[in-house]
Length: 150
Image 1: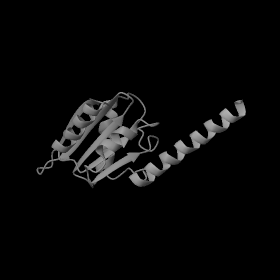
Image 2: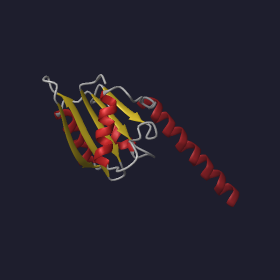
Image 3: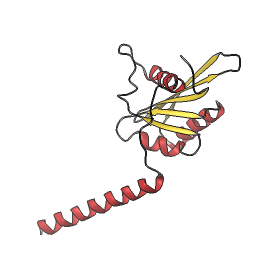
């Protein structure tokens, strides 16, 4: 199968850890894989960004469920040409033995071959406006509950 991207990173995001795999095609045609696990703390995310930058990755693909992707996405936003959040159901690995390292490698592989589509993530201005609107709604609801209680 034809490769579309030469240097790609795959991230499997969890609550406490991020498993990263870089897949780099060398000029001689050999593929080099490098895998590492990072914490989701600020220091861990800085180390993750450094790990991906040192590998020369241009495209980063991440899979996450829930809201665990947000701190990782925000920490890496703007550092790479393409930062994709992918739906976990669309990039499921083959059933059987499943490990986080294998998932990260699978993500890097399918991204290198162009077999995955990114999910829509709004630009920062829209995200900020959405958060502000949601916060206002919770404040209005709390005020209404308090008035009803009185």
